Image (cartoon, rainbow, N blue to C red; front, side, top):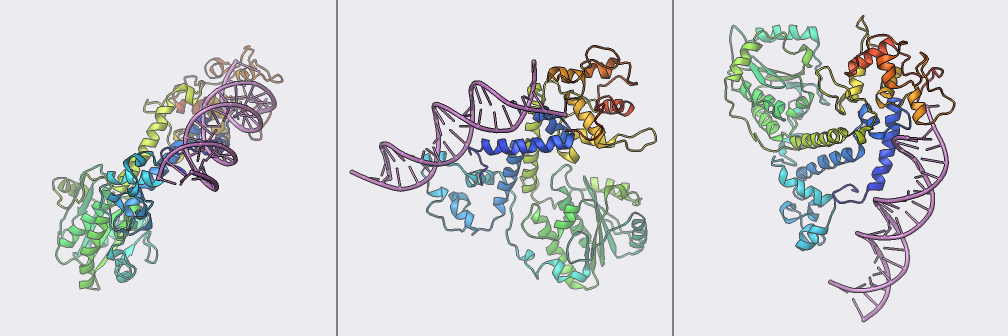
Length: 463
DNA sequence: CGGCGAGTTGCAGCGTACAT
DNA sequence: ATGTACGCTGCAACTCGCCG
């Protein structure tokens, strides 16, 4: 309510930023003198302004899922009020000049609405309690991740047994859905019921459309009384038989309508959806490559709404633009800190911040292993790494910069100033390797020299 | 409805204190 | 000699009530 275009909220953002900074220091073990932005990048914390922008954008997209008579619609402009009676203080009642001046969350919402072209039915009959497929045909549906239905968690070894059973059953259709390209695999030898589907690659909503198409294709086969679906996307499992207002809803409705008559026609017809994480996905499907090629050669008619801006796509864009804004800012030395040690990745690119899995630096630190392949990650190692990168560490050059009177400037090796450069590149007290251009090399250096950026006489915690 | 003044809020700028 | 927290001050924008 308080975050929208033109809102005066710098004070609040400042307070939240200072709070986030404390969290960042806590995560990284950096000093309180360390520059805020550098610390946040290391900790993988999206800065508050970008975070709020992202949340506001994503929330605004939900306006399109409101019912036509929702009270909020009474307050907006003529285009989006639906069937709600316009309130006397609605945006529609303002003069053009007033509209330019008025700011608020609802104004932002109405600016987002024309960008989203995905049709959403707020309360479709297929989503009503009692009419939902999972309510009506509970015994015939097996699906993971959904409440009130038997959960199937397929195990690595079980998958092979399942597949043997399915292939032996001439009336079973196996729908295998891959993240990038969906494939409807053939039934099997004795009675090859072959169907395949492929949807344009790289599309945001691809999994749901793929599962939906797969189901529709399977239903086209003759004498099918069992459909087994394998997918590695848990959101598709949650959504495929759920017709309530969500992105890709039209695929759910299409699949549910088609399944309804099939399930009704014979109580022995069953459909099961299995969650198969990527690591145990297709190794047991010898026909996979064959089906894949077949699938690639087919044009699929059911690509409903392709190229449209969906809610999910819009949300992804909001995420991407927030990340881009952060990355752009991060490139400036005055933002991340003048002493921030720019390091590369294994792929030779420069490390850029992200919020995924604790951020780029955290990910690399977690992956660090010793010769035996065991993880060497520890909080102390990560803290030393962060302090080294920020050049705010318990070393001589830091004591010099911040005018500590009780601490030595010189290195134990005799050099007059113990700087980061000295420790990493020249100091005789530390072991090889001394080439540190990438993050993994820095971690390697810390692995061999755990005392390099650590406190000499304070073993218990920092920050 | 619009103008006016009092009061409130947000914010930039500045100076000072402080730190592992 | 560096980065941040925090308090103070003055300005601008806004809100609210009153009045014609």
